[in-house]
Amino acid sequence: MKTLKVVKIGGNIIDNDVELISFLKDFASLKGPKILVHGGGKSATKLANKMNIPVQMIDGRRVTDAETLEIVTMVYAGKINKNIVAILQSFNCNSIGFSGADGNTIIAKKRPKLTIDYGFVGDVVKVNISVVNILLNNGVSNIFSAISHDEKGQLLNINADTIASELAIAFSELYTVQLYYCFEKKRCLKKYR
Image 1: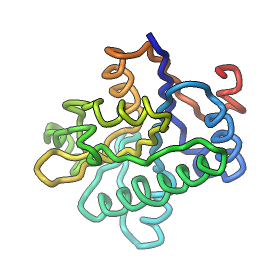
Image 2 (image 1 turned 90 degrees about the vertical axis):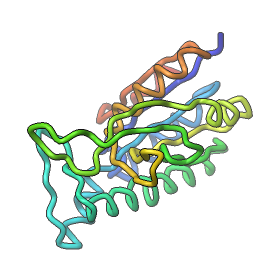
Image 3 (image 1 turned 120 degrees about the vertical axis):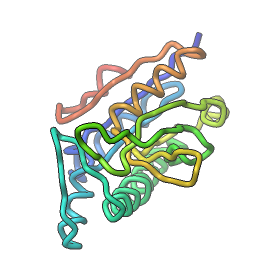
C-alpha cells in the first residue's frame, strides 16, 4: 500500500513569508502523494480589523457570521490558498488548491446552536476522495483551505485541524496515511523526507 502524507500547516508559518517559503520548499521535496491543509486565522482577523468587522472568538474558535464568512472565504480559499499553490509550482511541485466545495470533496453541516451559536461554522459529514485521488495518482498535490459546504449552496468555515484529520481517516482506505501537524517548530518536515 502506498503512503500518503497529510500535512496541516500552522498560522504563524503562513503569516511569515520566510518561514512559509522554507516550509513549502520542504513540503515540495517530500516524495510520493501528499496533501497540505491550511487555515489562516490571523490573516482573516487582520483583514476583518481593517474592514472594521468585529472578530469574536470563543475558546479559540471563530464565530462566523455572514460578513466573517465572506472574509474567511476570501482569505483562506483565495489569497492564502492560491499563494501556497503558486509558491509550490515554483518548486516544481504541481499542485491544485481546494475548498471542500470544489469537486464536492468535503461535505459539512452547519454546527447546531447549543449553548453557543457559532454561525456559519461547519462539522464534517463526509469526505469524497475520488476526485482528489485521481489528482494524487497523477502526481498532483492537493492544497486544502478550511472552507467547505453543505450541498445546499452554503459555504461553511471548518477548523483546519479537523479537515486534516478527516482527510487522513478517509484516505486510510486506500493508503497508509501519515498525518503531521506542523506549527512553529523549525523545519518540521525535514526529518520526514
